[in-house]
Image (tube, rainbow over the protein chains, first blue to last red):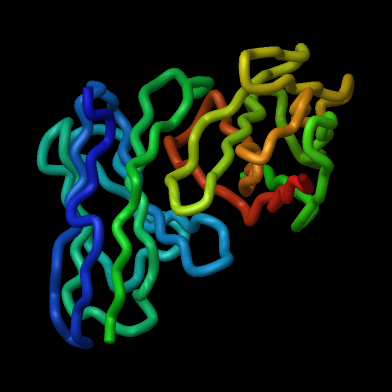
Length: 113
Length: 111
């Protein structure tokens, strides 16, 4: 049982390049989330998806797009990477009701040079 | 969204109890109090949650004030492996599925 799987684990991009971070879960959860964590900082919500086919902006959505392909997968795309997007990206999943816990992936460490 | 306030950092000696405070003065009646922790170089993990009553599990205890405006995560006997950032967050039983974290408390365990 893999839980929440993020790929890749590490990535280096040049400024202006694009890439997609993948997240897949095998827990049949409805809600999925993307966060970024800058060095020494807390987690900031980028986008979330309450169910298949729906997505909503979080606290820091600019520069990102997301796609909830199906119930299992939630991808995060950087169309034109910038050095300010250097961060560790975490995917999380959760199911209802609201008192249930969230499960996180191990993160993707992205460096934009 | 109701906010939480936590100290930026705390220190504790190994094998002693640790009390991590969290203030949430604007909490609503349907907000659950959740605690997560993030070990170095890992994603956050769930610790415990509660609504009104104190809660215990194998990892920790959660003490909730009678007016629910504050709570305390209690690690009964800290070990070096408990060194982490601890996040206190509120999750409403109504509304959208948005899940936001603050900056948390960085707990250092002194051997």
